[in-house]
Length: 612
Ligand SMILES: [Zn+2]
View 1 (spheres, rainbow, N blue to C red):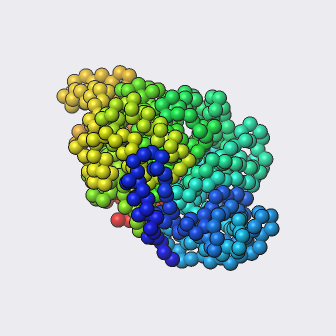
View 2 (tube, rainbow, N blue to C red):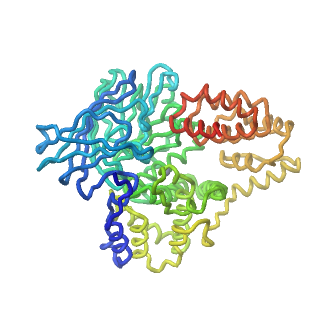
View 3 (spheres, rainbow, N blue to C red):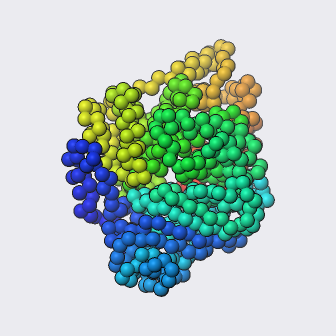
């Protein structure tokens, strides 16, 4: 099986893109042939739409049923699969009568899974694949009742990005292949199922049998499903929150600004094109911050703080409604097109809602984090366009595509002025709406739209490190914290009045490396860090508590590791524990107690680091 398909189409894309003087000629000429993370060959045959019919079996931890593909092409079609049990494939000309057709499941690659090659008899327009998922499907997390907030019923959710959708649906799993989808999901009568599609059963009683339609073409990684004792609460005219009953009130309060957020984003970047914007607050084991599943962002419950201090995560996921979901990276090497644009848009939404000081502060914090991470990355991973051939696309998920990407856009904004840049970015979203594009296509479009640009875009995209043209972000709010840190170090009074969560984080990170027991105790007595309800603040404090062996916070550490599954928090905490011999013994004991609460991907990362 050819995994890394070389093709003339790649060359053609670059040729056309680089000699394109006018916008009209810069079409997103994208071919799956460029995507080394999919077996599909859409040049031969491609999927246009899928229709799922699946039953959810919580006992066996499998989804079983079928997927019907509407296809274009002839000869044979290749789908991506991972850990799927295929029980039959049928082909049809009219979508009514299906005849069994030959298929072959190829050898398994650890990262990519197995290609499913299906013979297409003459005239085939539809294929139906009958299959079961495996309990170890990397996209599906099956939670036991005790892993949920409600503790009574099990729960299931999917996470498709980057290349996990193939472990619950056999399909052409490349972000360059956009498809529409329909689904029928059957589960227990008292459970709700929700998807990144129309969720019409918002107000009706549960029936256990649900239908969904996503009529806008999306890349496969954005197909998402959650099933459990989920309830809904309306927030505004086109927004609402889905979550377990135990978290419904707090979630609705935290997200009360959701409608205002969507409107702010629209004022900046044009019409919101996905009709509704709802948020699913996932159970505690959710491994990531948020996932921008269209119409229905999945979010970690760790952002429910009671003071809205962490809702910028929602601004980020909402921003993806333009950057990522509307205009999508064609391959995972172009991931910065999704994330760099999204961080830039997120900062702008935040500025619109909470003012420039707050958005600049968050940007400054992220830039410091980027610089720290970059110092640990090999040069090849410091580029915006990362070569991921033969690698797991997860390896490209660093702060580089996110923050360096956003900084490049900020540099363009500073050079040409905000008014012109805003016009550019709106035109970009319109021009490439519902398409998947490469970095080369972006470059050509930028060149055509802003021919006077002096910024060395190639340096930003293809060279390691931070370019000399990196914008300087000066945060007055952080400068104020730095001043108070100086006072703290000199034992002078410290003024923390009206500090925002991010200022507290900056304060904690700026404390001296050699804190002693009485300093830790005084900090805790003065500011109640061990009791913090803010997961970000508590996380940084617990890191200090491990480092400085601060005994009074150890119980809080164990509770945190037992109740939170967000990888960003738990992995560094285990890592910090493992730095000493006795800490490592404790880390292993805590991990074996908690690992079933964690997402399999997070758990395997921690397992690996504890095994070192
Ligand atoms: Zn994102």
